[in-house]
Length: 197
Image 1 (cartoon, rainbow, N blue to C red):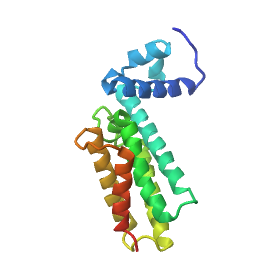
Image 2 (image 1 turned 135 degrees about the vertical axis):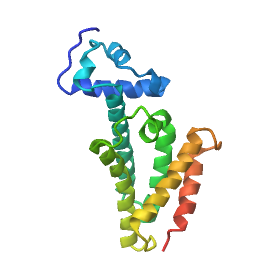
Image 3 (image 1 turned 90 degrees about the vertical axis):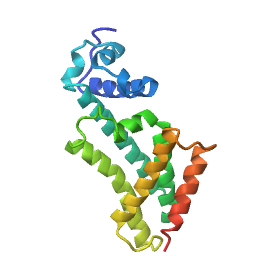
Image 4 (image 1 turned 135 degrees about the horizontal axis):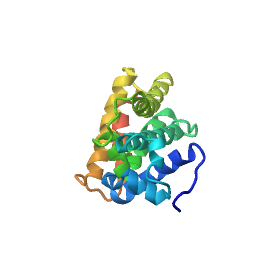
């Protein structure tokens, strides 16, 4: 496969997809520019047209992870078959399940030191976009009389902290449960009851 050609943008996409696969299979340390090039079937130098080094590549993978999380949460927020309170609770469930089902990728997004560019605008924007879905859901709940009158940002910080905490405990094996989905559902519903107006 050596020497395979890609249209502009295709190689970048292939690198991100393959890096994500490698992270899921063997962890972040398994990802190297050389290993990626070999697996995709391009020259060792080809990936450098898109990423200056491994740190830049992993930052892009983390950004893509946040984009997927944002889409997951947005899909829940836009489900008009549920009332705002139900959607708020389900967004918490969706967050926990996303983190647990994509554990290695999630760690890269939130804590891995290999991501060297957390202060870059693109990374910050991707992370904030996911959180903004939650804030917007809180505001809608307040506008429709479901959620208590308190700063939406503060409520969001609380909910984000609790869902992240649960996800992290589950991923690290510090909390063992029979059914992750049921645990996430119980926590978000119980937490949400305290926000009912």
